[in-house]
Amino acid sequence: MKKVVHADSNLLSVYAAINYMLNKSANSLTIWPENACSVRVSITKDMFGYFGGWEHLLNQVYMTTGSKVYTFDPHEYERFNDYLFYDAFKEHWKKIIPYHYITEFKQILRELYRNASKHSHSNNPIFISSGFEGEFLRFTIVDCGVGFLSNMEDREEVVCESEAIQWALNGGNSRASANRSLKGIGRYCCENEGEMLVISGGTAVYYGEDRSHIVNPLPGIFRGSIINISVKIKRVQFTRLAA
Image (cartoon, rainbow, N blue to C red; front, side, top):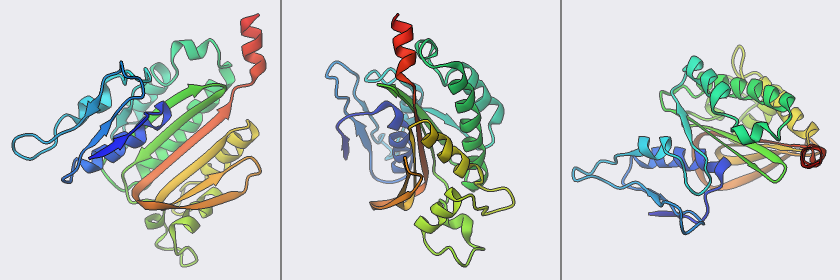
């Protein structure tokens, strides 16, 4: 049994993806919200030894954050567009976040979903969640596919996961039209005082303020990929709103 002390809303998609994969094994995941008044979410085995109810976990509101984890099958483009239009940005966010951020984020999220659909080489679902705390708007998209390195099998110069991620972040192309957008997305985040974190296999690569790549090993292997992006919503917008 794993225990998560606090459920950060923009990371709920990571928890959901891990839970999805754990459901295929003899394990389970419990999320214990920091708020004692919140609902505890857990997955357990039924009498036949199967895990049930992960759809309930994914589709219900997490009381601790007021956020949802959204799940999509690969290539559900129309449904994903509906999510961007109706659900990705909460109504009270729209009163604070300038419209151009919302428009740009929709384009970024659409591209990330297309990339995940194409390069996961899997029928496993794609998970997405978001958070808006302080001045930072964050989204996390997770797929349970083959990961970055497996998409580079025809690249002899790429021999490990960190090289595969950095190659993509530098504008490389692992297939005919693969991952070119990651470089532009990372640049956009940096230009708006945010950041991008890409995780795949046993590696996390941080694309930060100076646009350098900081590589950190993970304590375990994550099959698939996690992309977390953020931008800073300028404080002047909050001041003007308050006035």
